[in-house]
Amino acid sequence: ATASQNVSIRQNFHVETENSLNELVSFLFNSAYICDSMCYYFERYDVALSGMADLNRRVRETMLMGTRKLMKYIVARGGRVVFFDIN
Image (cartoon, rainbow, N blue to C red):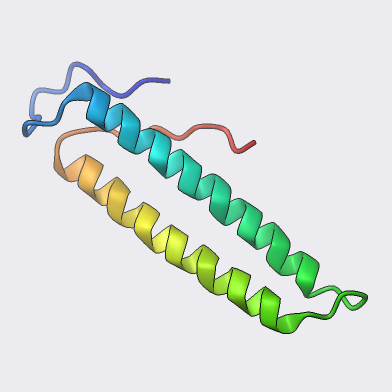
């Protein structure tokens, strides 16, 4: 999927930049998904590493905060946020 090319209000926002930022958003969502998976792995009773679970939870929240900021920036510049599949 590509970002929008026919938006009437774009503020010096090149399409390649928008596409690159959308790829970064996708990468950060994928990383947050992995951190979430690791968090629940470390919370299991047979692993019981609650400190690692908390660390992964904090890292995930930091990634999601940065992702939200990037998405707001894309929209503020007249672009569209494009979501890719998580793999």
